[in-house]
Length: 150
View 1 (cartoon, one colour):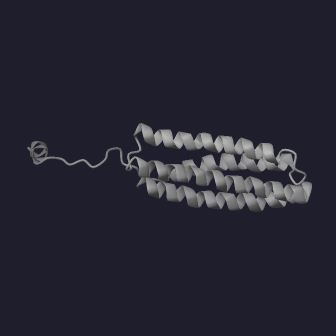
View 2 (tube, rainbow, N blue to C red):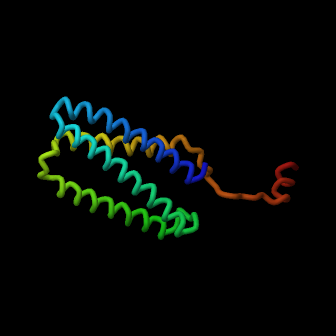
View 3 (spheres, rainbow, N blue to C red):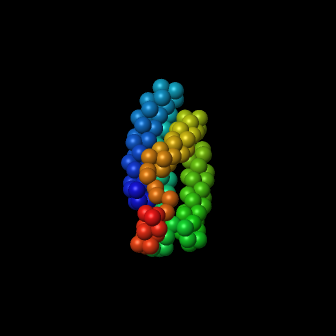
């Protein structure tokens, strides 16, 4: 299975995770804190979608730049750079939303916590379900076949 297939599977699972967090979090958030709880859960689900999209975008961008060579230093540099950008954007969003009256901090915390744990599970499930060969394109010469026969 190619990297693109694993990535596509992770994106689909991530979309399902985002929908589940939005639905379950909104119901629980509304029951616990009313409209601010509902909005907080939706913000947490939106952050899930945003950051999973950043991850997918970083892998696609890195694959294009490095010509599908995932073991190159540049590939890891691009993915790590986007991860750092995600971290900075996440902190900035939290600072902006910190004192907003429409945010219930505890509900938002739990929806983000569910998103983090869920996205890790999504990545594991997408990767474990993939059949990735240990070696790339290997061609055996005829003399190796003849030696094995006799």
